[in-house]
Image (tube, rainbow, N blue to C red; front, side, top):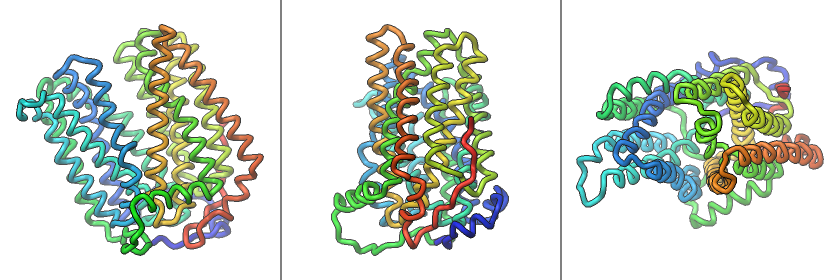
Length: 446
């Protein structure tokens, strides 16, 4: 378990130890290197999966069902999964998840040779469901394990590095992966094989972690599964900071769902952008996200993190407004670049706060619970966006509605933080045996 770091000690430490210092932790470097390689493989296979599924069916509805197969496991299983992440060795969970993903992903391009009592696309749905279930195990376990692999004053840097790696991969790999997938068509097996090999690499790297990642609790607990899920929920409800973060995330998820559902239809239908132009827009978002993560990676502390999170929501709303009013590609790219940075500005402080405020034996449940509520509400938002766009015969009105909601929710968030004096409660609501939350020092972007 990483040794606790006091707020005073952080104040004395000055600037962040930096990326190089974090990577000197051998076990964190193993985790990070595995994720770097598997992120590259996943970026390629994600494109191959979409092309393969569409080639099998030529049906937009098939793509929607595929998206549901990727989402349902998080909503259905994350609660129980969180309990077991807090019971079992988190290293074992991550290794098993990687092995499962490596096996399942290589089977997907072979489904056309599977028994014909199911159409090949049904096998793809089933394997995608299993793959998404393995993801639902891996990511909460990884988030719960990071505080055990770095020092308390390195959590901002460690999470920034993870975000920066993901954003850079999204910036660089999809264009190259798109070319690779196009050259391979209609034989997508090599693309999936690359992803499978990347998961094997990640599993091998994780297996070499020496840190004990068994949660600090009695493994012989006789409480029922439901009681342990409720224990995690009660911990969130009983902590004013966590309660605020959960409610705020749920409210943002509605607008996020609308935006995710209508983003591509808006660019194609309202702005008549082609695939190449949309690729440039997505790259702009990834580039700004990587820049934001790099900025955070230079910080040990984040000043007024709850205001920063609320401020990010306002920036997102303004960016969506600009995108709806956009009249050329450059304006759209600038708007999406702002949204790309907002994702990181929201994610890093939120993740660090959860890692610092939640006891080790509850961390898996809390991260899994956040995944459940955010994903479930986001799906509702997608439905609202789709119905609204159909009724209005345009994607513009629901996009504007999402922008208004983002700004309104964020302004209310500011008032809630100030009225409830939440920043003054950060220190008092930390678990005694856990890392004390630093008093933070990052300026809210204007």
